[in-house]
Length: 446
Image (cartoon, rainbow, N blue to C red; front, side, top):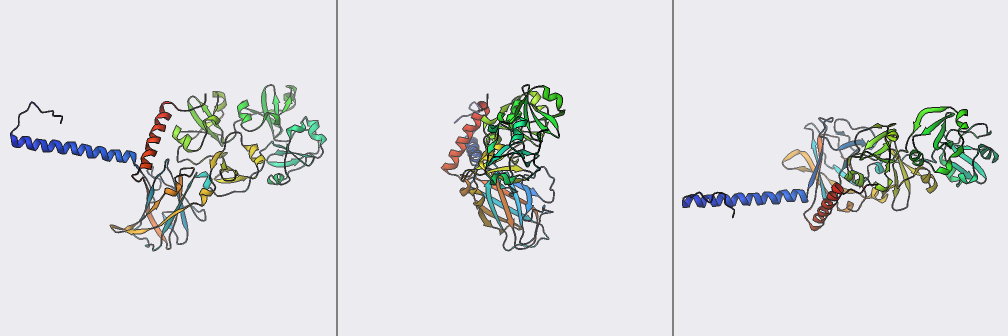
């Protein structure tokens, strides 16, 4: 045993006491090391929300809405209603302990329960109306030609009009009658004396789109290609610019596009750039490094930078999900997900890999019923096993809390824990390896 005091001579009784204390110190250090190793290998993650201080920066549970989509107020839940809240956490955990701390004046529930499911937060949004073809799409059906202009379906009155305007027949996509029903019907294009909004052009190595009878220039070829195929643009010489005023506004990338500049990766959405905080968030949100476009300073100069995009952030507007079961496509817009009703319609929006999701996962729930804690009668808790979620895509847990009586909470918490077993140890080892690999040799596009 290592001895720092071997030159010091002690009385036999004192030396025995010293040895006991020395052994106790080593034993304490060993136990502490084991405990710290346990916390690292089998960690727990704690989330909480205080209704007494809802603006606190320490709140890391996202309180979202009630069943009727009303915003929660002061921790009150009326009997028969359900409170929805979310936590985002990377990795798999074995169980979640949910605890409610009731206000002293609150009624005591006799049958409060909670259910949880797991996916991406944005994929659990409520379903909105289906979305049709992207603006500028050229379509044909049964010998009739159409363009999507300001999101409206506008028919060319005769087959000669698109020819006169310079369109090639191969530029129009053959579609079904049903696919024409998802865009509002607009006015027919009865003459070839002007181009409708949404018309696309290639002029002197630049792309443009017609908007309000003015030409808006795309900030780069990459920005254009994030929305449209090259064949959709009409080739014009520079004299065309003399006949049509040019807008000062530049057209950027499609919402949901991944771009990189100066060692940082951003998501384009709503005219802003969302900086991705780290490699783990990028992978955890289902993104693919092959979809990242390297861009110049001029291409990002048209945007404002928004807050960091982290593991708790929902996928932004423009994100497209694809279900693994039946290859359905959904696009995220303004807090809802919208079905893209066909492969063709999805293709008009999708110029990179979609985020894979499981639609079946939305129907997989785990549940538990709250019981009063013996040591604190204002606290109710229950524990939900999470094993059934271990193979599902996405790291957002959406909880729905229901009570048979009106209750008022001061706070609620969720404590995620891992069981001590071989599976979780292996998961830790793989995660540690991937973390080291991501830190020192991240796989990023050239």
